[in-house]
Image (cartoon, rainbow, N blue to C red; front, side):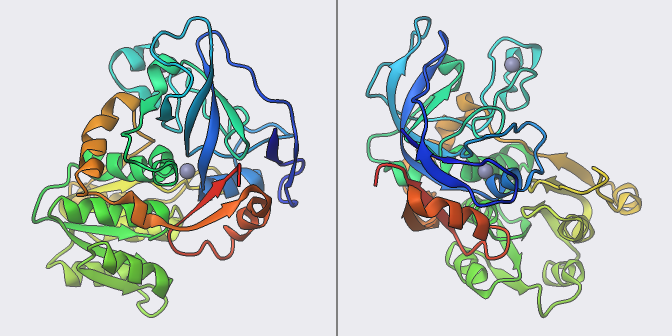
Length: 347
Ligand SMILES: [Zn+2]
Ligand SMILES: [Zn+2]
C-alpha cells in the first residue's frame, strides 16, 4: 500500500510503498477513504510527541470501510463504514469501566503510538470498543473530521464546557478545532466571540455563527477586548490553538466563575505553560482540559449532524491526493490555512 512515511523529524516526508497492516485479534484493518490533516500531525512531524518512533506514518482523523476483522471482534464486518476517536481505548481499565474512554490508561493513538491513516490502510485496536458506525448519508470526507477536531470541539464545548443557551463563548484560535467549536457553540444558542490572526479564518467563523470576531493582529489585548464585548467576560472560553499567549488570553477573558477549556496542545521546552492562577482563585474560575471524545458518546453528536444542525462538511475547504500530503503537512506550521484539508489516499 502507499503511505506517507516520516524518516526524520522536520524533514520532508515521502510517499512510498509499505506493507499492508494485519489486524490484532481484537482489532480491524480499515481501508482509509478520507483522512484529515491536523495541526497535531505537524507537531508529530516536528518531533514534539514522545509517543512517536521513526520511521512513522502520521494520520489520526479518518473514515473508511472495514477491510479485515480480527478473530475476537464480534460487532463489525468487512464493508462497514466507520470512523474512530483518535484516542482508541482498551475497554477494560478503571477509566474505561467508568465510561471515560478518552482518558483510557492503556489508550492507543493511531498516527502517534502506531502507524496512522496517511495511508491506504490502517490497523486499529479493540474494534468493539472504538469503532463508530457512520450514518449512510455522511460522506467519508465529512466523517474524517469527526475523529479529531469536530469531536474534540464537541466534547470541549458541550461535555466539558457545559455550554448553555445565551452564554458568551470565546474561542481563541479558529483553525479546524476552533471553527468546529464556533459552530457547535452557536448551534447550542451561545453568543460566540471568535479570535484569530487570519481574516480568512474569521470570515469562516462569522459564517459558522460567530456573533463577534476579533483580529488579534490589530487588537493587542484580546482578553480585554473579549471582556468589553461580553459585558465583563465570557462564561466559557477555549484555547483552541495551544500557545502560552492564547491560553492566558482565554483565562483572562473570563467573567467570574467562568470556565476555561484547554483544547490546543501546549508544546514548550520546559513542558509547562504559565497560567494566570491568581485570576483563577480570585474569580473562582474553572480550568478544564479536553482530550478527544469517547466512541460511545458520539450518537448525540451524530444525530445533530444527521439533522443538519451541525455541518462538519462546511469545514472541509480542500481535498488533496496522498502525493500532496507531505507538502501540506509541512505547510501546517507556517500557513495552516482556513478550514480542514482532507487527504484521499486512493485518489
Ligand atoms: Zn487532530
Ligand atoms: Zn482503558
